[in-house]
View: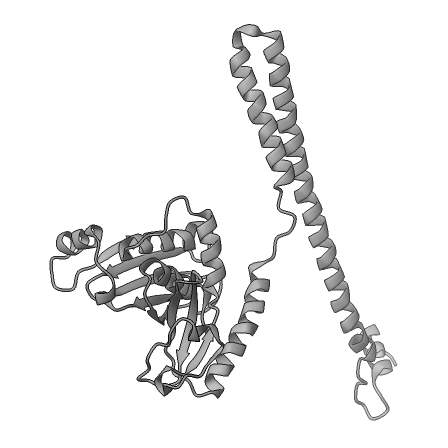
Length: 321
């Protein structure tokens, strides 16, 4: 037909007899293959990235070893500066060995770890919900095992069970006020790593524990961008304001940041800790740990903070990271 364009002819060939357009079966078939292709390409790029990263570490190790060997050879050829060159050679060889054998072999993206944790947290939350338990989260120390258990009571007016009873998942005692469930808190593993990495002893006062735990969250684990702690030893309270949390949300059951803080305080003060998590903004929330102040003797540091920084009845000490 005169005046018919190439596009019009192509469109007329694609139309069915009733004037409608048939389904693009080829397009539907191609979509899964395109997804598979993207996955294969993503895996290839990951392998390539890992290979390049390991290659960079190997090159660095070779360069350091070469520097160390050159320094040792120079020590033989130039006696006046032998001591300095021997030290440089030893440093270079040691750094080469450390770089070669302590190279991280694999990095797991935080999204992967968060996805796995969310599934376990959802299962625990479902157990608590289906059993009709309270919202209380009590982190109770077990001095004999040097551990902490997360206890969720059945009754609002509960009594904390003995540490030996908390070793069971389903806590069923003769005293109904002691019934509930107990879990290993998600912060227990973080606390174990924190203990291995810590230089000095674990603090025994709220102020020291606040400083140590916030430093670990920001510098050691890098779970949060910032953490500001406020302690009130007389009232038995530690509040940590968390900014830009990278792992776990405020609504997550036993969220890792709050769990780590609770485990640290419970272990340091050797007393049960009740924890509340309050959402503030996207990725920001506040963690409040409470304990019985009568069971913890205030240190000189806490007394000084209470008397000097805020000489009112409700004293506080702030630590910002």
